[in-house]
Image: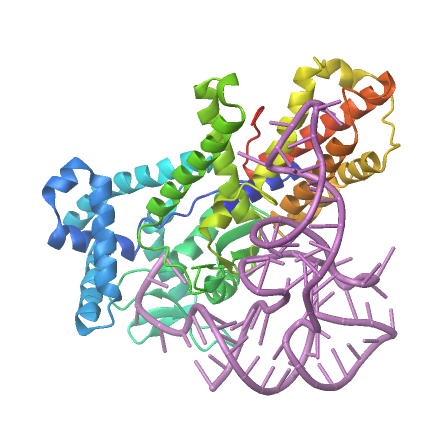
Length: 442
RNA sequence: GCGCUCGUAGCUCAAUGGAUAGAGCAACGGAUUUCUAAUCCGUAGGUUACAGGUUCGAGUCCUGUCGGGCGUGCCA
């Protein structure tokens, strides 16, 4: 989610016309699980008190039972799939329940996105394509692209042992069916040149096959370039894949709380009484959120990464905090020096580069374009994070060695103020492209 | 079994085929009467899993071996 958000911002800044669509899973087996849970394990009082909490408990409960490697687990899996199939075939009861559940689930998800500062142009979701699925399968059958296999319908591709299944033998549709419908819809509606899919690399085979199936489906037409922008798996501290499926929003939420309260504690110690408390909590929010977002983005997205509490919450070293700190230091100089930024920017005096730290900083400032380009080229926000770290690092060295307000003469002072201003603007812009906000004081 | 992918400093990670493989954390030693020490300066830490090959040049490309992860028709 955070990688996608950063890429949308970066690609837009670069000049691309970007449409973001959160392809949310609101029509799949997870609703079969919730339906089954609702029928068998519902706690009515809890549901009335908080539908969100109860539904998510039911989901986790059923999931856990299903994941058991026992006979009961397998049986339950079948029953869940039956609920899903009933929903897909238009069973009125399941449909009514589904309509009741979707807004509840959406609300939960929206709240998290809002907190993370993530916005989508569309959230069509899988259910949106549901009416298109049956005609799509019929069409592919008629054109001979798909055929019946062991009771199901699949598309067979050269060089692959397994077909792309688009209808189960119980009549329900699958991930690939929706994906194909999505391609058709998006071509018609948006005429994109490129479609980026941001998902876990474990879905690589699916996308490889699905892209080929899409090419068959659109044979003779102009197909947009389809790209799987894959990212690595989050591993636990033991190196084993993290189970994010069992209630991950809760985990993220408490992580955010912790990040903010840690930031607040440091803030209170540092700027304490000089500032108003409402200010501080907003500043802490930006710093805490920034730390989490940066931890996620600073990694090469294709590498697996080991989840570490301390790493996610770190505010020293190569972190968003470091950049925010550099920015705040510039702001502090400007405030103390009563600097009129507008007139500074308009003034024609050249920037002088005499000290080694000044030259190093200026050289780094010039590399911004390059950083953006490489982030765009490979869809990799970590190219931008490492640039920003480098830039902030050069600024810190400059800050230590080159007095600004107390510079020897006025022209040096003006020149250094300009360097400060350019640095602050570049950091602010760069962070904004990553979805991270700056703070005036910290 | 087959396919994909990864293996880089104690830990977490960088490095369009190009210079002496770089950061952060942890460790150790310094820096504050001077614009924010969430900082800076320095020390130590490497046979880039292993063995071959291609190349003027390989962490990066090819082959093999070992080890980890993932995937492998009716989940998404």
